[in-house]
Image 1 (cartoon, rainbow over the protein chains, first blue to last red):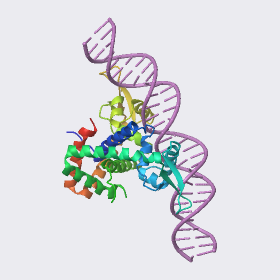
Image 2 (cartoon, rainbow over the protein chains, first blue to last red):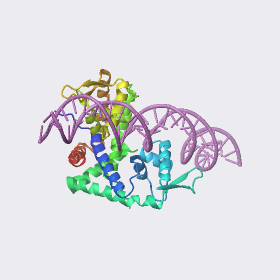
Image 3 (tube, rainbow over the protein chains, first blue to last red):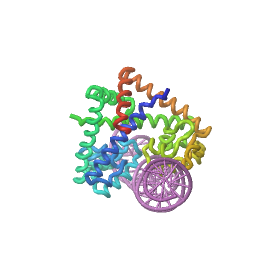
Image 4 (tube, chains in turn purple, green, brown, blue):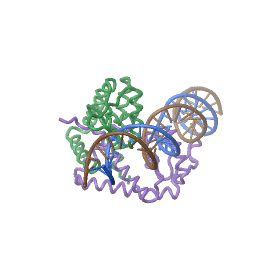
Length: 142
Length: 142
DNA sequence: GCGAGATAGTACGATCATAGGACTATATTC
DNA sequence: GAATATAGTCCTATGATCGTACTATCTCGC
């Protein structure tokens, strides 16, 4: 009798496979210099710019780490820092035009992966899995 | 209308939360020197020892990376290297007595997390989510 | 208004994680 | 037995990660 595989490990496999796919698609589209950690940071950006601490929080990293990643992204021309009009301490990290070109590629691949998973499970089970995962957010992402 | 959250991101949240919990439990039990990457490597070990390339494959890292992690784990006294009787090129990475003490702690916390999730979703939905995740392995973990 | 405490960003420095390239020893295949 | 594949290793370079600590700014209670 085989030990039960923890749900979290199953999630790791899915997450990691999807991330690999997105990174590969980005490389294909000319964004081969993006690293995994940079990608995770970018995934947390919203239109109009995002504060460093928010990015760090979303990517589950310390703000010093986020700072280093943003520095690299700035150097690569993907994001820029602008003043936050609402808070003199803060600055907003915002996508440049080049950075904005990443989004459609990443989202298309994200969507493709989701569609493949849905094709494998069938629409009903896929929907159920997704709602279950979403419901777990209250436990997992407080 | 909010953009749909990709399933893979939902999985990341779950995986990461569980990993944090396990790491915290291990630290509590006196294994505070274990890092995230070391933990992921240890999670891939089976009784009787495991080859480096297998560990690398399971943790989704290059064998050079696995080598470095095993070196640290050896130095920390958690694993040892023994000859592989079936292959002169290979060596088996095996848990020491101290390393074996990690397992019950990690598994108990793993289980606790799974139980909490089940309590939140209810047994039926938890079961459905798990089987869906398991079915995705053929797509995601070829 | 003002002072105490919280928060945003940053800097420094140490350590770990990660992998490309290349090499050796052993196995496998034909 | 020769050609090829595989397991482990070394060297090296780069990236990721965070503890500690500091400054500037904001917020809240008085």
